[in-house]
Image (tube, rainbow, N blue to C red; front, side, top):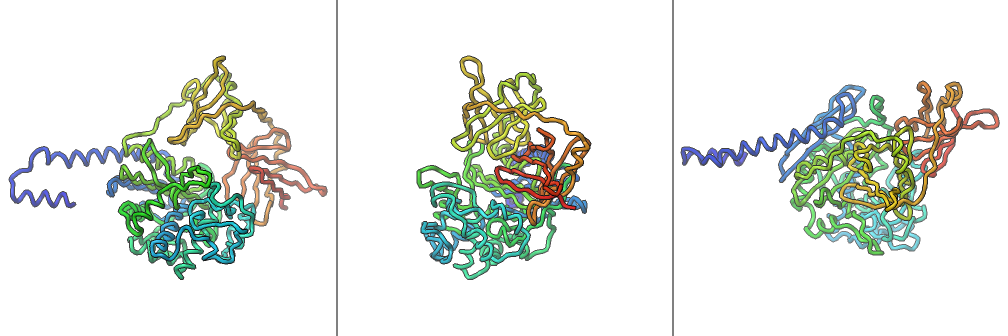
Length: 558
């Protein structure tokens, strides 16, 4: 607008602007339009018209380059998503919580080196020195409450801040504070409590009055404390064609770790404030964007509520979020002055918003990610890649051949099919990950180079893998397993048969196919889970679940 005004003003003094000046603006507009079209071509295929959708915004030099909504805000009601729709942020909330802490630090009301007992005197630190900085950087060693097996049983219950802290405070520390990095929602819950103690204001009120109102973020709030009416997206869970409203969650529980809702427009305002250094001193912003260094000298790649990484060689500052019904990602490329936010209303989407945002950002900076075209390999050649490959002293990557496809699973995670793009290269569909196998002098496969974003990890082959042979189970036997099983007061597993296939669906999760290795033992490929069926002494069918080493069982309900 200013450029147009100046051009009009200049026309009062000269008859015609130089041709080179007159042509610049249209060329820039056309270039931006072409770039927006490329962004849309990348994003649109991931969000179908009748399925949960997304809102996307792209800024460059503080100007909106792209802003669009896709899919449905509410599948059941057939309400389309709009760019103005408000969605849950999940853990993007953490950057607002960390900023609130640093505002109080800049005011001299606390220091990140303070022991948490200075503000939470009753918290049992077991003689350990746990600081505010440990909470900010996920290095406290405190157990993350969302990872506790009993969390699902209380997740719908409204609880006070004190009651939630009581839920995890007596658990033993997982490690010495500052010694390791482990993502931790409990740490950010405690930060919310500290903000309340120091400021004398509820967390929801503090972030509203000190951050959202001053920045004009009218549609950002702690869920349940919205100030401005507007369209809200329904959260969804499930798989393509079978999306359902997400499982309920009391928003008293994500709290300062993940309870905020917002729009992409408000996130654009937030990025403008952050990139211009508002709210905090320059030193505090620098500290927030600096990866924490562990006591042993190792880097964490995490600052104060921000993940510090690289994208196509360029530094990034970002964060993702996952909460019932929603998944999100927002990233800044400070050197390129680019910001991308992707908010979605499904917690089980085909593609992660981080992947979408990363692909978009890479296009904007002119360094698009490598594209792969799937080829069909000789099935007999796949056996050469089967085996166990060592990631580190705690995790392995396993490749096995199942149903003519090469399947990959990391320790503690489910199995996914990878697709070939060469005679030794494979990629993970709908991600940025790919891998290339190497051979020794004799021609035997001896390692895999795994590419994840800008990181490459060479993982040596360390063992063979026992192949799982999938068998067909008679439909009459499968029918005896069909029904609902109660594993905890709040967790159920529904088992159903579809032809000769068996599916299991846990509360709040997508339905997963169960593959049989015997007539009573099954496994899933999407997650690291095994399911067994048995009967109690009275003949009541029972389901046994082993998910990542966590075991539970329950009787079939009448």
